[in-house]
Length: 399
Image (cartoon, rainbow, N blue to C red; front, side):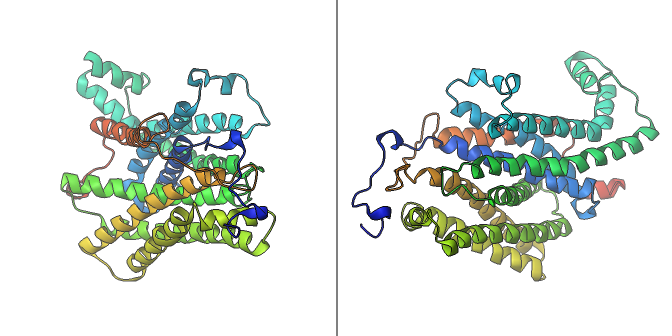
């Protein structure tokens, strides 16, 4: 007991007003969903800006997926708030020295940018759909609104649309990085919590966001392709897995660096962080995040990237690695958000965390919120071609 507790405490001493974890599951999935937005957008921009041809099949899908996740990025915060109906005040009464207040503007402007880019890419489709309906009925009106009243599409429009899309995607890359790096900054700038206060926090959040976004995108692509009975694009899969492997190695290296810094420095806070990692977070952090869920994907993606794996084996291994990475980043968010709050303000004990199943901060609420973007993606996919059959494209000569 004496070895486990810091500052020579003989009992697990915590302050009475610090007996509960205040920021719970909702604050865990808030940075998680924001990360999926940033990560999916990066894949889209690789084609639209850097013209990586292998990512063409999933470029538009990545953009629509980013938009679908983006719509719900702020929802966990609203659920967490005591007075959610006052959310608009973050815009009407800006507090420029508050990291959370500025986030409202960063998030909203990024969502507008996403909407603009999707509109530019699908403008031709909207006009075509409007003409199919002849402008009649409710659908005719909806397509007319989506066309913004412009129902003619000229050959010269395609070139200008493409240039503007590239421009928006170009702005979007640093904006996506700012969006998610900023979430890390919100946590990293809290000096009172030893587990958060590190300058590496924004970079770790950003790199893990790119990893989780790419992983969830491939899982979506793989499921839709399997469900529709289409052929998998093995060339794209291989390229995406190599990119994901590199991104995750960078992410994992930064997570190891952060821990190494704490261990090597042996600073004032290490005597509270070490028992935290040996005790309450041992299973989640040491075995889960840094162990199985990190070393597994590094190994599997290494095999996929370096060896000549083809066909179904490539798809199975890629899905397995992506599934582990999606959980790795979710566990990482939990370890940061909840783990940091387990250290009592007394610095002489640890707060116990209790899982909820039903309730505002319950697992059920989290699952419902996390599933909402997929429902929106499905609805959007019913009206516009998000992911098309590669075999059909080749047959019609568009590929």
